[in-house]
Length: 115
Length: 116
Image 1 (cartoon, chains in turn red, cyan):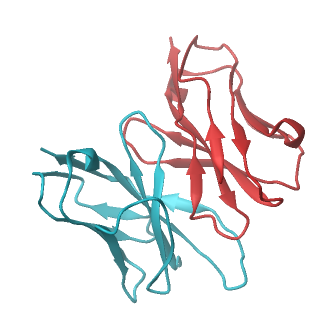
Image 2 (cartoon, helix red, strand yellow):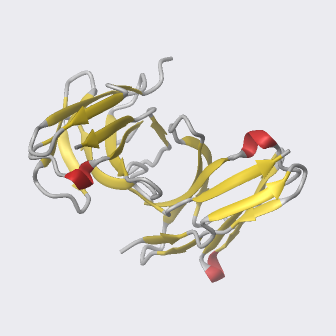
């Protein structure tokens, strides 16, 4: 069975601080995908990134960066120089290689960025 | 290109009633997945429809059922509503290709169901 754990329930930072959201996963599959989604108060899940289990390269996109470490089954997400608009619930998810639609989600981390 | 849409936005029902939620997939997508998101939790996979047939199901009882139509839109039906069914119901569409090609899924805004 697959499982995703986001141990940080809530994080509060002041604008311009860097913040890292942790994600630890469990799976017996050798090939899988990992995702991060953002859920603003409106409720719609916004896709941020997908990472293939064979690709352990870290990725940077603007102020966002992701650190995938297969050895520790972790896929952490860092926001650099946080902004108030980054306030949202962030979800880490895991899916089978062959099907994006059957994803297992963590319970999310609520990030509050204060001005 | 239109995104994923869901209707209604909000719904209030009483225990024991039945409800139907609707989802229109993103243009070009052929697969629809439904998730239930209880307050303070992550989305839980209910089931997926591909080519008008159920293609996988999560740990939900049979009173949760669905349909997919030839235009790839989908319905989620829940019978004999219980208080614990109160949640945000999310629909996601994706393009799945026979042979196992994997793609992102795109979520709709959700339907918030309240069961009294």
